Image (cartoon, rainbow, N blue to C red; front, top):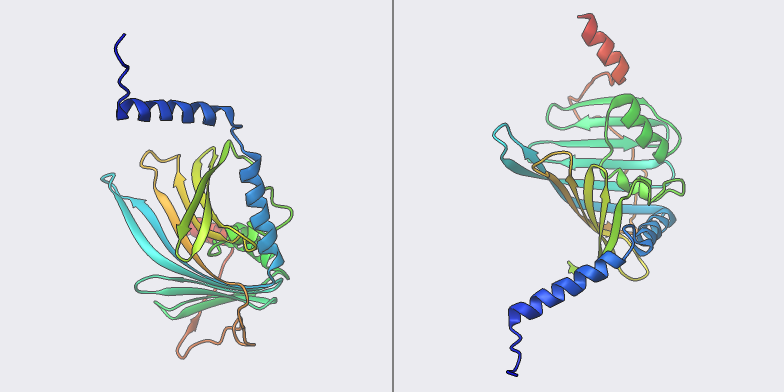
Amino acid sequence: MGARIVTWGKIVALAATTSSLALAAEPAVSPEAVAALKAMGAYLRSLDKISVTADASVDYVDDDGQVLTFGFQHVVDVDRPDRLRASIRGDDTTRTMYYDGKTFTLYGTQHNYYASVPAPPTIRQLVDDLATKYGIQTPLADLFYWGLEDHDAGADLTSARKIGDERIGDATCTHYAFRQPNADWQLWIRTGAQPLPCRLVIADRSNGERPRYSVAYHWQTKPTFTANTFRFVPPKGAARIVLAPREAAASSSSAR
């Protein structure tokens, strides 16, 4: 009988088959991946003061079906439980939220306008209030949900698994992949005693083009804030406008 020749292609095919069998044997929702998500949330919850700069990009699908990617930057300062400053910086404008425990102010540099309204007593309540009452999304809002005890990190997951360790910047981060009914998302979590999110990528499965939102985080876990960090002082010439709840805005529009 002649010697059997094992080619490189056969070795690769065999390895792929073995890997597929190993992955199939794992549960769809890995307890290890969910536990890592919860550990990250617990660590975020333990930090009273945080400052994070996040370089972000978002895909937009135009009328011709071409995917265009736009970049911007988030800067978020948090002093729990009732101080927040959050900015979205684009090429031609910066929109900043100020919250001092009593008042919420939204300021935009492009038109030099601002709006202030009374605010609830905690950041979590503020984030919920802005979304439901005004339709305003807080930059990096996931950070405030991941870091709360009543947030179920494993809710609605149909798949969760560990991919492996990777180098991101100056940190080693563990790569995880998660799936929910309308979204695939990947999360890289720093290894060691500070399990902070390093990077997040979300793909919209409800859109055939799978547009993505990506963000890379840069953390300060011991920031220094001043008394004016979270207090809004109107710039010269700034005009105050009314921030109307969505219901009031809709009613006003329909009455015209």
